[in-house]
Image (cartoon, rainbow, N blue to C red; front, side, top):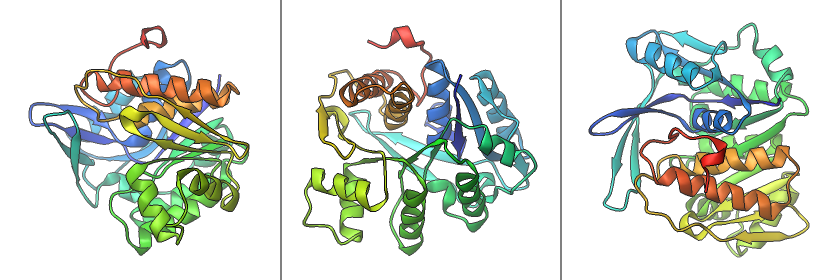
Length: 290
């Protein structure tokens, strides 16, 4: 069975009335376990109660947590506020445990024994974790490397991280806002969606580029064409983590060598299902996905 490694942040998503385990890479790995894959987490939490509880939660969700580090920084958290439509806004804590990953014994073995990995941008905001994440990507060899750009804001550091990480990955996933920001920053404002996806594929030697469009579905491009897959109509309760669910479903189908349309349809269905329940990773099994 393939091992999917989540490389980056795990944290608490704190709502006004309760909290859920979160962090985009960790969410993807937890969804992957729900889908029948093995999940491993490379991250860090604090030497605090929040960190203890987060590690216990990740382990109970089926993740291999042996590569979760503990350090003297506080466990990360994000304050989540939902609007009337269930659309979240986020306020992320800074200088947290996941910002200060260190290269430790066991990470080289984890990299070499990874079938796929998911990486983002947030956990690379500090040089400590950025160095570890980039080294892990280098040592992961032939693993399927998926980059969910998922940046918060844009500056020279973020742009450098995005470009460097794209150069080391096989698949990129981005949403409308992220695409528009990247298209402008990369001097490609004149390109339409399909042409920009093709530009990403050729410039960074990618296997697949995925543009998510929320309720309007997604566009997948693999260099030979573009597939548009319609979204699913659901009653949205909380859209937090829908993109992470999409990514997990996409990774599963890529590992199965499924056609693009099947890949997009399943990823859309999983993302839509996640929006119907609170939290980024609701309880479910593969057969529960409508």
